[in-house]
Amino acid sequence: MSNQKKPQANSGTIALNKKAKHEYFVEDRFEAGVMLTGWEVKSLRAGKAQLVDSYILLKDGEAFLLGGHITPLKTASTHVIADPTRTRKLLLNARELDKLITGVQQKGFSCVPLALYWKNHLVKCEIALVRGKKDFDKRQVEKERDWAREKQRVVRDNSR
Figure 1 (cartoon, rainbow, N blue to C red):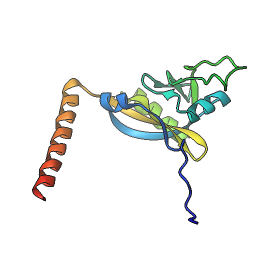
Figure 2: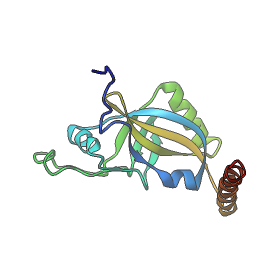
Figure 3: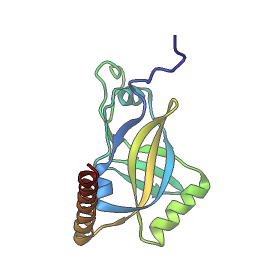
């Protein structure tokens, strides 16, 4: 018998915000806890979350996740009126909140969620200070990605 742990089916990333990495330059990343109710945790274990049009609101020294969609399970939320897009509070240190607030107010950054994931038995949200990309920036990033891929092909073909 081996003493290796079996990988869990629900471990790792719950939801990604792929649109954010396309639309913005990521400057600084933070890890925040998320205040959830019981039915939301059950839905997240089933992978029923989306971060597509969500954003972070910084208000009164607190951070909130707005627009994050967690679809309620029919079996888990029978006795509760579930609001899939409710505002969820993010748990951050005071130092991290100060960095976010000064970045958004003084330096002109935006704050967006990048991912929801499991860390042990807790749900964490990766948030980032971001700067918007222009259209020519997006095209330049795509050209660089294509060129890197082409270089790998050439090196691989020449090594054969």
